[in-house]
Image: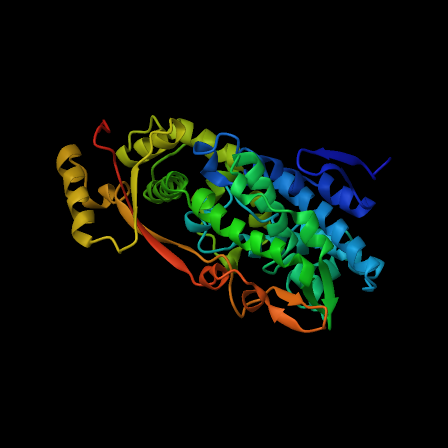
Length: 410
């Protein structure tokens, strides 16, 4: 069977699968599940085109990684065939642990188990299936390999994950500000003393990359409507778990029911849980919410209906912290109007904060290599005054509450 297939990607054109191991991993049911996980969670409620999946993104990352390997070898950096294949596997599987709608599960029906940790569980399980061929990939993924630049390509401030998702997400949302020149960035990469650097000529591409990241966060990833929708989804799952724990019978697919039935944390995330998780995707959640819209529980039915019919909460984003009395007023109004408890009202009225830091100083920084051989952090090397500002985190505060005309029934 020909395993060196060609895939057609709307962003890069034709992508080749580099070897049969990558082909077999792509064919595996764990990876095929990513076709059913939206890359951008609830963002399609704001940007109708944002229906691309984690599958698209992972394949795109492998394509960019192939370009990196070619560029670095051309510049005399030694990368063995084993290291090359390990890079492809690590970047292919870096997001395999994402749950439905990407981030909502981490904050609702599993107790603080991050997608990175679940990705690692999947990789270790696949390593057994593939007779230890993923051992080096796992080492690189965990950042434990002695050649640090390989780890930086998987997880750093200029890694192939970011290089793909910024370009891909800006394409599918139509937000042109996020469109970066990943090919130019890759062509400018080099390695000095085992660390990744960008050659001086690439300085403007790096500046554009950092600015694009900041704009995409404010305009897309932290868009207030998308944020309200994601918070609703988290609360739908929390409410379902709460009702289930109280003995209420709820409709849910078998994999979703497993997570409602069990208290899952990092300590008991074993093989059985991983197997069930591998069958859980966006469709389980959408299907459940379609049923839950008609549930007798006031909170669950209304939250589900809000998402299914895009009748979302109002959200106000401010620079200053939300005053407790503002929250209290909205909660009291709901309690009075619908005869619900204060606890139930808190599902519809809540506050939170969002933070955006486009570049982190002193953390896996992006270094610029001058012709003289001098290496300088991008913030110092850049003649753009705003890069220094972009390395400071900006925090905004939000409050969500029902729209005035919301006709909730009880």
